[in-house]
Image (cartoon, rainbow, N blue to C red; front, top):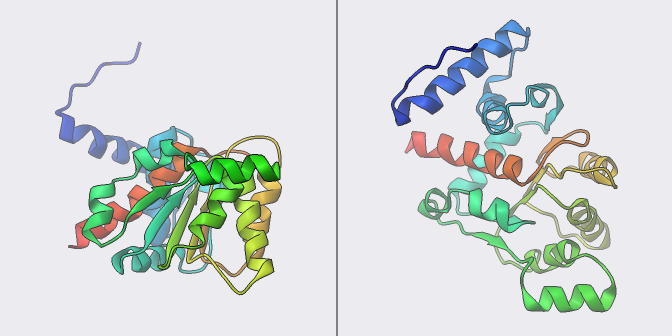
Length: 213
């Protein structure tokens, strides 16, 4: 039987990250310094060490994302769960706002008329925002597919993509589309992901920036 350890609330997360660090070393996994805090927070959220191998970061991805947030970029999600999980107070401190358009009436109506997903239409609405946007996609591969299509149809580009949808239908193919682009990104290769993972990545970036302020 595992021994119960007692910690003060503020010590629990600190101890959890220490355990993650120890187990990564035991597994012979060394994380690049810039990516370490993102990967560890994802593992902390999921208790899944596979993410240490499957998270793909474009060159200087973490630095690019933090610079966008520092300069007031917004974050658009594909689920209200991700939206709820993002620390919006810290984001607001840098001038940014988090959005999810999945429940928007116009989005729902357009999706029904066109027989497409609300996630796809919500990406179109997000593309109209007149400021840099970080897309945090944790559920709908159709959101990533639509982002890719919008890039092919015009000279518009997302400022950054966090692509971690979870599932079995078109999930891997949608992620591969984003990997083919030159858009700065953090993408989890394979089927794993989720709204909680998307929020964890956003918060890892936000908390790192907060430490520097």
